[in-house]
Length: 206
Length: 206
DNA sequence: GAAAAACCCTACTGATTGGTAAGTTTTTGT
DNA sequence: ACAAAAACTTACCAATCAGTAGGGTTTTTC
Image (cartoon, rainbow over all chains, first blue to last red; front, side, top):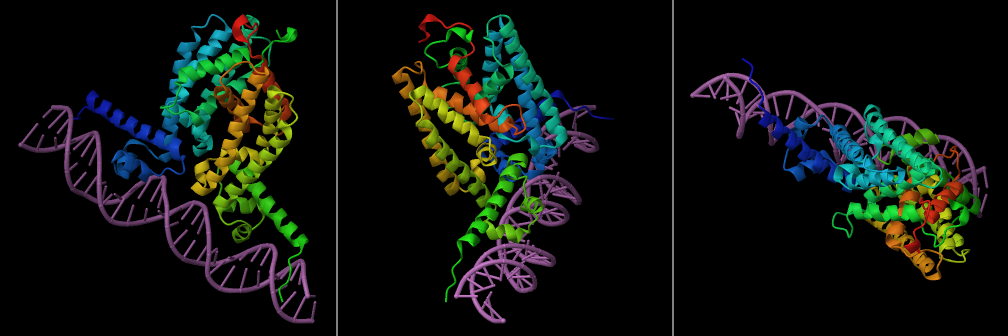
């Protein structure tokens, strides 16, 4: 009669798969998707190519899975973070502190350091849907902040682009052994976005 | 006896070469360096592969030349722009207005949308040297602004990272047929970086 | 007008790499 | 203890694409 695969075997398989994905994410970030060969990953992992293909469908699936994990982590972290804010500004801040923490992980960096068109249109469409939701949520939170008086009147679209730019670019320069951790970086950026660089505020700016 | 190549022939050759580089830059930005084949470019240009290789050494040289042109344009534009400022803040603003204008061209976008390690170490080192000079100049200008009182006391490194992040990321979303041109985008970003999003300024922030 | 140079082409080569066939070995479940 | 499943391997294939050999055609210079 049929044998059941135990939970322990499934867990071990998933751990092995995650190990492969982590190695892929790190190497994609360091060398680029196309400059990374499956043989590169095999060397890092101490496995053969058919073994890698035992766990993932193809090279594109490696990238898709890395990106999918990052997107899931991002949404989960942001869902927790945003609900703590008392007004638009605090929610915005909480969202981006969470954002910085995810986008400095290997999976998170993948979202920034690789290209959507290295994946199939189906795959990149699925990921982009999640991305679009986050974009529109950020704009809504900015609008809430304008309404509740915690954010000055501004163009939410432009602010959103500037914020995402600053935070996305962290993936390019952040190092785990750097001077600041992601939370400190996020706090500093938010101080800047909160008060700007001007020494004095013109009377009409509120 | 030796024949001289006339200036007209040299000009025409250089124009043809620039045409090839422009097509390369646009396609690298749209599809990615590795997803772009020489055959793709031939189709766009209406030329054969050996003809492309008549004008450029190899595929990597295409990317290097695109990046080199962008870097030269950047330094030229910034050299002109920064000298007009009366204080640190104005110079900073002028630098980034110029920066936005170059980084939204096809060559400029190449600097952001491709990877340094798609080029040889020699090539990317040469380009990085120029990049590093710009980075340190921006920090110096921020420090000048703090000294002359046009920029509030802040961490120049952090501000520099945030500014470059916002401006570099423009390459990812800017479209020529979009609502705003690069100067307008830069002005809006600088309004944000100048006054921040806070409605009021705490007394100790200057 | 002729030779040199510029500019162009088709057909091809060779290297690389994603992915698999056809197994073997190890582990697990009964 | 044995059979099934999981996990793994070597050797190989096929497709792709960067780049070139060996020219031909057009333009330019003298």
